[in-house]
Length: 255
Image 1 (cartoon, rainbow, N blue to C red):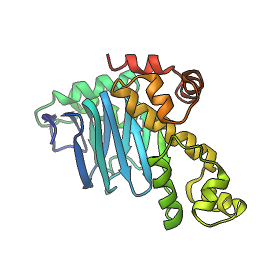
Image 2: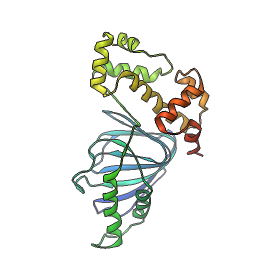
Image 3: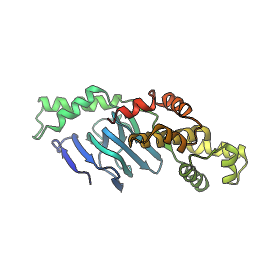
Image 4: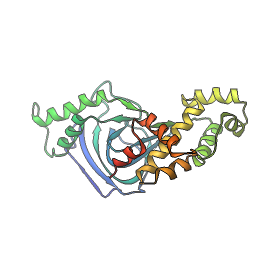
């Protein structure tokens, strides 16, 4: 378990919590009766589901639907807060796992909700705080920090092999040979299974790995070489294009 866990008033469709995790902590596969929104303040949380992987760096959040089996993998010492939400609290709540931006208003509302330790009375300030949280979570927008996984056994084995050797110069032809398919057949099946072409998936796999490694304060040069880039500048260009910040700017979030 994490080093600390606290929460607000439980008997309401939404309640806030805070949680600390030590580096290297793993929560094995489990699920919740409520929707869980985890807002990462420091460190990185990697969430694994049968559908793929989601990575949430500091300042972002991950939305996990009720009943969604998942595991958590912690990189760096993580401080997190968030909310548990009754899936019936609103009719249009998201039903898929996603990494989301957490705006300042929602962050402050979650902080206020953590301090609620008493019964929620109708028309009270505490009720308005919690109801506003339910309004705000309906407006969260997605961030592309996820990696879908195929269900086809051969393609899944390929993806596992690729993630274990991201430094290799994986090409469509190389990947197709790995699963004993023609390049054309492989490309068609991979796109159908993941929603991404192989080049997009490979770039995303490298990005998520880099986000986790940089969070552990590993040198940019070392991360770039581990991912098969010839130079830090090529790696930095990819990282900025995908995240909107340079690797050094990303690292500063952990200082």
